[in-house]
Amino acid sequence: MIPNNTILTDDFGRKHNYLRISLIEKCNLRCTYCMPAEGIVLSPKADIMTADEIYAIAQTFVNNGVDKIRLTGGEPLLRKDFSEIIAQLASLETEIAITTNGILIDKHLEVLKQFNIKKINLSLDTLVASKFQTITLRNQFEKVIDNLHLLLNNDFIIKVNVVLIKGFNNNEIVDFIKLTQFLPLSIRFIEFMPFAGNEWDKSKMVSQAEILDQVQNHFSATAIEKLEDDSNFTARKFKIKNYMGSFGIISSITNPFCDGCNRIRLTANGKIKNCLFSNSETDLLTAFRNGESIENLIATSIKNKKKMRAGMNTLDDVNNPVLNQDNRSMIAIGG
Ligand code: SAM
Ligand code: SF4
Image (tube, rainbow, N blue to C red):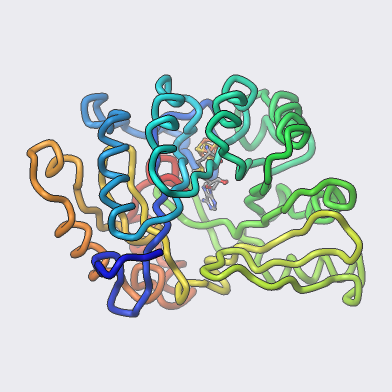
């Protein structure tokens, strides 16, 4: 239940009860749409939140109405103190979920089970091993597939995140959906988004309309069932009738869902971002380390949140490199 305190409510009446915490800026993959080819300048280690700081800052959010936390990165499972972080956060009254590339799932399976972390978003952009190497610059396809099955065998609730890039994996949309015939997976096709250094171009993006066209052409319009979207949804949800799983489309570019946004992001170096598309950040960690209250900083950041995509109201705005490159790389934000 959201307390009376309103520091997490913005000027458009949106209540921010969902905190996404990036645990780390490093990653064991190099997805080209996420990590710039030249890499990123990492924050000094001393500037990265410790487990205790993550807990204390998260607790402030929970005290003010956050009831869902997602751990992301970089690759969150690379944190050496991952089990300590989970153990501390599990004492807060919130749901905890994780977004991961899946490579280290087997190492952390027991911790996830112990603390009842059931919801895992696993990123996998192709079902072809050689293409996995092309997009991630690493040879870990088998490992990710094995770990996906490990999660399925252990009854986790799994969403598979697929960033679609024209000419790379737009010919795999149907193959991904076919996985849902006998597996309880939710496949989420994500429109490719622009961030610093990821060479985004509108022509590389596969739009919601194109995705639905392909699905209809293959399965027929009557085979597709529209499912009810979650409140504060990001993915518009569908399924193929009689299939076990479902699929969704995250269309931040062509059909944004900002009206129901309830998300706030905390970067690994302790800064909050009120919108994924915003270049404006508020440093909580320095204030926290100085023993100052961080609630005013949170309130101001939330009040400054723009109605849509950090003020990029049109597709032309999103397409403008002056606007769309003036943000951190996704790897340093946490998707
Ligand atoms: N390493 C973890 C993973 O890959 O799942 C967590 C961090 S990753 C930054 C979080 C999500 O952001 C992933 O699902 C990834 O596919 C997505 N992502 C990264 N760059 C993106 C982009 N340019 N457009 C859309 N989604 C992106
Ligand atoms: Fe790493 Fe995830 Fe970014 Fe890929 S999408 S480089 S796995 S942080």
